[in-house]
Structure formats: C-alpha cells, structure tokens
Length: 440
Image (cartoon, rainbow, N blue to C red):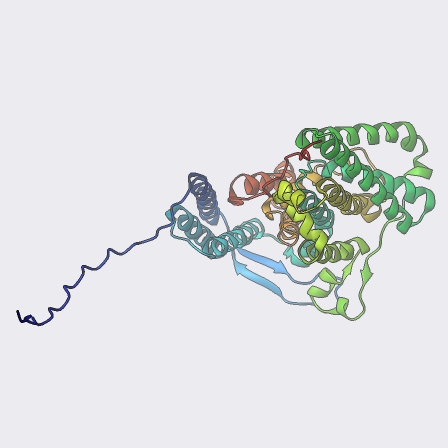
C-alpha cells in the first residue's frame, strides 16, 4: 500500500507566556522607618514655613572677621524669602519620603537637601534683621575644633563595633583620658607626654571593656554603662582628693596652639578653617584616612569585619575571634584617648569634673548615623559639631531664644537624628553578641 504524503501543517502558534513582573516588597521595618523620616522632615518643613512669617529684614552672613587680611564681602539674603524657599524644599523632601516613590539614591539626595535647607532656613530666620551679621568663618572654624573629639570618638566606636563589640563607654574613655592628660601635662609641662598619657588611659579603659565583654562574656551594653560610672567616680574622687587641693601644680596643663600651614592658611575663607588648627585636629583628619585604610585595605581589617559579621565562620577558617576583637577594641582605645585629651590640653588646659559633658554619647550617635563607616561617621560628627557651634554663635549675635534652648539644641538634634532621620541602620550582624569557641 502506497503511503500518501500530506503537506506539513504549520505548527500552531503557542500562546505567549504571561509576563513576570518582579516587584520589590517593602518590609514593615523599612516602611516604618520611611514614614517616620518623612513625617519628621515634613514637620520641619512646616515649621520653617511658620518661621518664614516671622522673619523680618535681611539675613547677613559675614565671610571674614575683623582680623582677616583679606576682607570678603558679606552675603545678604532676604530673610522671609530664604526661609520660605528652604521650608518648601524641606516639605517636598518630606512628602517624597511619605509617597514612597523615592528609590535608588534619591532618598539620600532628598535627606541631604532637607538637612541643608533646615540649617540654612533656621540660620536665616535667626539672624534676619539683626544688627550683627552671622560670622560664618567663626562658625566653620569652631565646627572643626568642636568636632575633633567627636570624630576621634566615632572612629573608636567604628573599630569596636566592626569587630562585634558594642562600645557605650566612649564617654568614660574620654573622661579618664582628659584627666590623665590634664594631670600629666601639668606635671611635665609637655604636650606630647600628656598625649601619650591620654592614649594609655584610653587603652586601659578599652582593656577593661575587652576583658569583661570578650573574655568573661559580660553584657556589653551593661559593661559600657558601668565603665562610664566608674570613670565619673574615679576621676571625681581623684580630682577632689588630689588635684583640687594642688590645682597650681596638678591642674595647669599647657594648651595646644593652632598650627598654621604656610601658604595654605593664607587662602581666603578656607585657609583659617582647614589649615590653621591644632595638632589634634590634624590628627583627627589623618585618623579618618588611617582607620578607613585599616578596615578596608588590610588583612587585619578583613578579619575584624569577618568576626563582626560571622564569628563562627571566621573561627572555622582559622581566625582567632577573641584576639581579633581584643586588638580592635584596644586600637579604638587609642583614638578615644586622643579624643579625651582635647578637653584639657586641647582647649582649656584644666580638668573639671564631668568635663566631657556627654560628648562621648554624641560620638556614639554620630557612629550610628554614619552607619558604622569610618568616613560617614566622622561626617556626622562634623554635623553635630556644627550644631553645637551654631548654638554658641547664635547667642553671640543676640538671637531672642532662651539660652537653655540653645544649649539643648545639639542634644535635641542628636535625639531627632538617631530616632528618625537616620533611617534603617544595619549594624554588624554579630554586634553585641559574645562568642564562645566550641569545645571551650
């Protein structure tokens, strides 16, 4: 039987597959953080709009002081219009957060714009119509000086937290180091020797933190609080019993003088701000570069980050977790000691009880806002330094705000920033978790 060939029928067209659309689902924590940030930024925007109605006259900002060789012009802005524009920009940023349509780098851009708008708008409202212009050079110069211990304290926190050790004791390290620098500097009349004494004091406090939290597995937050109380008690006792009765010999340390870098310090406006500071300020800048290099460009830094993220995995590949954490905490004590020296030999030359007045906690807030990064954390420290200096400058130009509110301003900014404006911050995964090697 002969086979019959039938023409081949074209294959039936298969139905097109349904398109798969991948959508990112926002977690509950991320949504809560976004809404909190948006609400705070929107509130600041509305507040600036209200302040704009009370801004009368011109807002003047002086780019030079009376002693500068080159006198730069004074910037004059319309008070009401400036505050109004800043309020609108802040309000738009807040609404952008609330809408949830900011993605990629837009949230960071919106936060930066809002932060700058709030500061400029508040300053414009505060100095509008005043007889004296706002001294912008003094503001920025003082910001660098005030932020110096905050930068060093934040770096101390970075080294500890990256290794998985919570350091709430920065305040105590500051206080003990300030006492050591003041007393040793008064006896020796040598600033380098006083700095060495401050570093030793900071390292000893760090050793206590490491001993009890890494070796004896004491709760890290509780131990940090205990060390702060210990520092307050021991320095207060020694001050009352030893230093105050002999204040002429034990509480008159030499003070650091500004070191002007030839040529660079003569640059108008930026020269005095960046290139006419104390040795501690230059050390703080160098420390930022050094810590960044140690954390991200060395084998030791890789081990530190490993034990801070997954100590068990680090132990599996042969890394000594306890030794690595000890070294990182002690290294942080060096920077905390330098930061504490600022309060005596870096500023007044004399020690007083509780002289650090909470700067260690502000450094801790800068660390959290800076997302435990060795560059971002110092930048946040500069922000807090700016706010603290602004409070003193506003009182100098005669702003009609109670002095108590101005003194409270840095700490209020700290609370608001950490509570809402910082957004979601991911600490190292093993931060605050003690590690016990299996079989021990």
